[in-house]
Image (cartoon, rainbow, N blue to C red; front, side):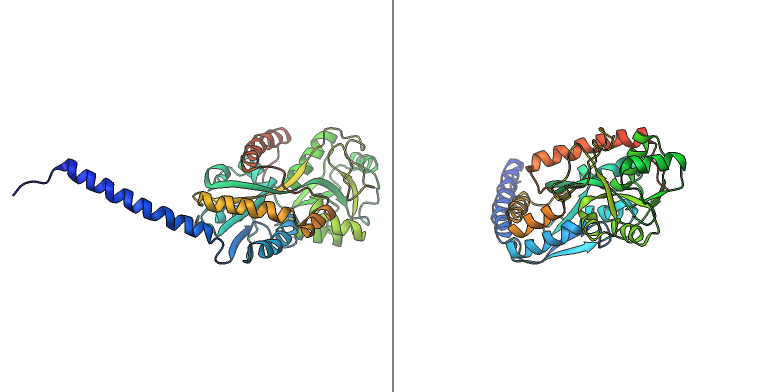
Length: 332
């Protein structure tokens, strides 16, 4: 019996592998072409009612109109948004699982030394969805001051007597407060919550005194008069709230904090599906309904391609690491 030639066997195996790959490619292409063929899951790593929700829910509604399938919001709060991120990182990269995170998640690597996920290693950055300035809001019954300078005078007379709420230790709300304290040489007691929604409710009820919040989640409460805005971050006023001074006008020229929200996919999500999602993001951003909601919340939509968004995320991780180090912020 003649032994089979090893070179021949390798050739046969290579040919079989190539045939299988050729068959797989059309199947993957057909799957991408049919996307979405079922409801899509979006993990929002905070409780309902917070800043992320303020943009996730209208985005979800418009996605259903544009793509023809439901975008299901899965709220999973806790640990400054890191529990939801950890959960999302382990979901199947099948093109039907996505994650809506933001500023909190570029701060987290500097605040949580034992994260079981890596934002850049375990996710694919897809698109920037919204960016809003941070706003300093107070409960008008607890804090009667109408300007930042009046507030600073009080803080210096009574260090530690006033407090501020945040969406949790290590979130943008927390670090915005720490940066404010650092730049004004004041002390305000930090009260962390399990999301911006619960923090805002306690601010409105008067259980806490103030909050450094993303303008998107505070907007409706500012307009109703339930909380008072003393300033927006940065060097210009926000068109949605032209009567609210900016930080530069309030004597804080270097206080620039932006809360932003983006879309990620678990690593391994097919490239063709990524392209389809990004196309949907662009379509949704051009809808008049979304333009109106974003403008009402003082927010900007998108404005970056996928590569620019990924580069921004990388730069923000380094930037917030410096703020954490300088402020001495710690988990509580």
